[in-house]
Picture 1: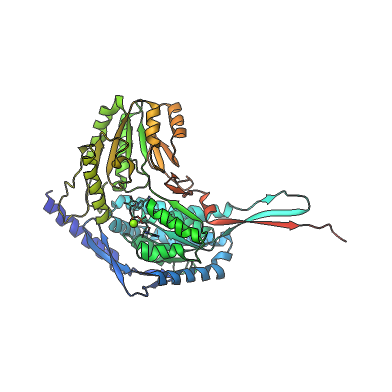
Picture 2 (picture 1 turned 180 degrees about the horizontal axis):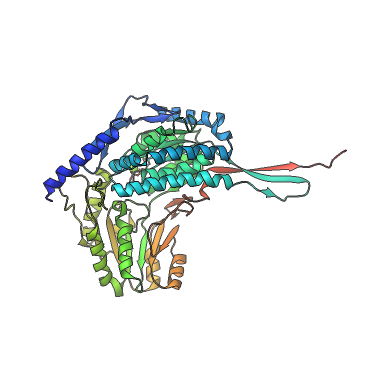
Length: 506
Ligand code: NAI
Ligand code: MG
């Protein structure tokens, strides 16, 4: 296919999909159980990065809209949600997720259009997102307080209570999954929610809120659209928001935490990563190359846990690189709406420009591009925000491409000569979200997993997370753990009740 044919086809596919996805739909904010425009009267566009066309518009909310949503959430907490039993909340959440499952194709299409995700990945991610929400609806029934044997003349026990209104701020790389990681435990624990989706990807969150109508009591789930400074910041400063959870860039996380400090509001932060994938010389190299490629090219590299630093032992470097390069070449880059596509565009023009700058920077820093590096084969400016899967070799750990989160399909390969050097390079980084190890030696796997400072270590695999596996960062990668049973506690506070028991006087 020539570039012109490709461009024609992808445009036609997207025009059709956009009209299918938006024909009967209105994408507004969702406040107090109903669609809502912003008090500003303003709206902004959300575009699909696959062809850089407008999908639709959403309200451009501001701090007054945030106040409105927080008031609605507070009222719902006081009147209904906060005083339901865990079982009652669980039933309502599961009824809601059934409605979402019945609409999962539509949700996947919205996710694909908004973020440029390959449609097969989008379908998988919608299923995963719902799985996470359902998990919390189930586990909350089994999570109870306990009795403490203080003395024979007291009865002391704990209760786990919700905070009240939770403010949830989500980025654009996995809009539904990252929303589910927060919404699931927040709602199951009994909090009501004001959710701010990323301005680049507002659509799936809008639809899941609309589909809660008549199932979740009004005001339990509110969605406010807009930009970080206009909606995100007021939400983090709001005195009636008593729990915050944020996923995004580490610098924004710092700002969120500072704002939270003023109200002594607890925060969960899931921030950036620059995860090392260490390939030891005894590894199954074919498998390692395939894991390395999936680890840095899935979702076009826009994953906080991406294996963006590949550390390879010098003895197997050449053989590994050959395999890694052919894995990169085998990625099917193109139209996200086609089932066979494995690599879509970057999620926005802004992200595309950032990644392109890092590719230039890597060249200037003296690393060698051994594969990719350009926007071919789709280097037509009408075809969307594509960058080829790119591999830099000869990277040293002091280069910025080895230290900073690029968030694109760009791998940095570093070489090591012994175990201690591998671990030193792996840990010489401000982040500590995840890491990977490729080896067939059981002891080496355990030793490296112990020595690498990261919240998750995957051995001979990449990215496997299910409801129940705690996920979160060491160092600048964040505070708290998502995805797991213990996450519920981040949305609950413990009350200890200690009752004096007097001797009977009869
Ligand atoms: P960001 O951290 O600025 O945005 C994430 C969310 O926070 C969005 O909903 C945004 O509107 C909101 N936000 C922005 N400023 C805020 C503020 N002052 N107070 C409250 N909320 C605020 O990330 P951005 O600008 O979209 O992406 C920049 C870079 O961050 C990416 O290139 C990538 O390297 C990294 N990133 C990492 C993610 C991860 O999963 N760890 C996710 C998204 C981005
Ligand atoms: Mg930002």
